[in-house]
Length: 200
Image 1 (tube, rainbow, N blue to C red):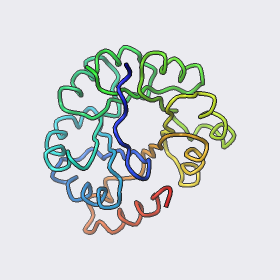
Image 2 (cartoon, helix red, strand yellow):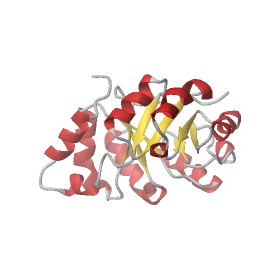
Image 3 (cartoon, one colour):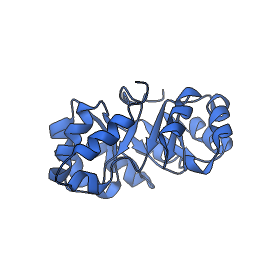
């Protein structure tokens, strides 16, 4: 049986956390929770920070690893307590290595995305989704017939279109930048998040 993805939040937006220490991320993560963005991804290089983030936000947020490329990556993410494992590539070998965690596999074509589904992925992600026009967004979710996430440098209107067409979530990789986290105020971050409250 394919493991199910965790709840991706009320706005169906997965947020990539910047490569910063957990202490630097904690205030921004609190703002994310307050605004209803509770699905986050960290890169493999940030795996040592995952334990600290889970101690504070483990009950309110679902934190996964977003750039696994080897079976060892998937196994390490599972052992560290990640909620899911994601790869931008079609790497079926990550599924058994994830030790029962839901896996998101990437692809660019319907055939690649279908192959990810056949491999046992809980969802597939179109990477990079900005490489495709609006007609692709309107037709691909129905063609894939599997939980589909649009991932890349998305604009808000593109995110709306993907969800309206049947995508389960979007993953705008640029949403939370280091400068917005490290500034004197988190007001800029909050304004950005409020502009991305999809479905409101």
